[in-house]
Image 1 (cartoon, rainbow, N blue to C red):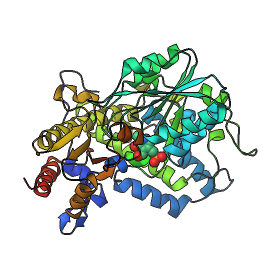
Image 2 (image 1 turned 90 degrees about the vertical axis):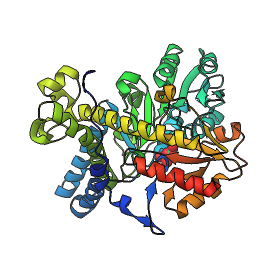
Image 3 (image 1 turned 60 degrees about the horizontal axis):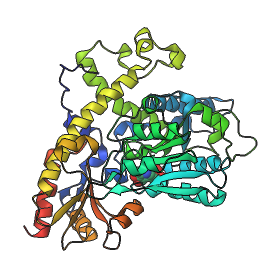
Image 4 (image 1 turned 180 degrees about the horizontal axis):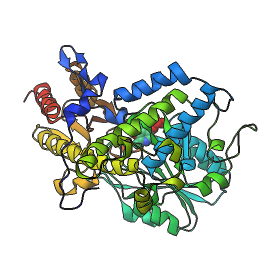
Length: 453
Ligand SMILES: Cc1ncc(COP(=O)(O)O)c(C=O)c1O
């Protein structure tokens, strides 16, 4: 981590982009511009290679007594270590699954087994439906009362007073998003976890939208569960859940009898997607390397020039002396630096995009637009432009090579609440670290041309 007097070096975006084969595509002669990160990000070459190499060399089911199966077990164990560094937890608190939605349904069913009529849970109006519908279904099955935290319409932030007023001794769970995939708002999740815990409730965090933009630290948040999807942060199409070990041990999963009862395996149903799990290690290492390189410029060279723990020291109990001092691995330190770099870069892009959009006649940006509050949002912009539906804008931008999204992107409660659902929702422009100022300028020019400025 840089000290306060050190400046954060700029991200080398040319070098970053060279690692992503898909970014060099064209559409109708225009360079493809990927502003669709909130729907899924592109992947660097090393993720593609890791998936391909697994299938070429290691492909087997897990738990067998022959080389490819043993290598498969090692691939899964390495990915668990990588995600433990990513979340800042222990490796046996990492659960792999198909995607965030199915992991949330699984946990909600297990939590529901211990709830009864009269218990309450809290969800929010801002959340993606994957952090709402599983809880509504669980509540219906067990006669649990659902309470809703409302938002401030003017800036699309959570109404914290309303949220706090709806947590009480009957509350058993608070489900909240880390950041909104529609309007970009970053919620004060640490504070929300504290409110939940004061009432004796569990805190479940949907970090799917936050992960490409901000560092996750479940140890600092003290949340009970946190879930994300690796395809939103430069990895393969999978979901990963952090659960505090005590909960993963205590709760009762719906599971088949032969499946191990040990944590975390009891939560991983059926055969996992091993090739994508190989890609998860590569995607965490890709992000870490962004920080690792700049870290190296200012600090001692990293051991062996490699990321993460050496294979012989794969347990958190075997950290180096420097790592023991902080309780963090080198890869964790590198991830911290990487996120600082990505954040600086994305903030500059976001300021440029918001300032430019504000000059387009009839354009309205939903969410925070005050630059002094940009730390409360990430670089995901929900826009409407008078007399142009989001569908029309996304389609015409798509013809020009700009990949954006239109509609509700499953943040249905928000689009209904803001009364934009019937008229096509929003146009969503999602900026991540591989986007450039030039791409933002060209998008603004294309929008001006489409609306006839
Ligand atoms: C904030 C948020 N939560 C949850 C999800 C659902 O994730 P998954 O597709 O992995 O189920 C998404 C997907 O877009 C999302 O943006």
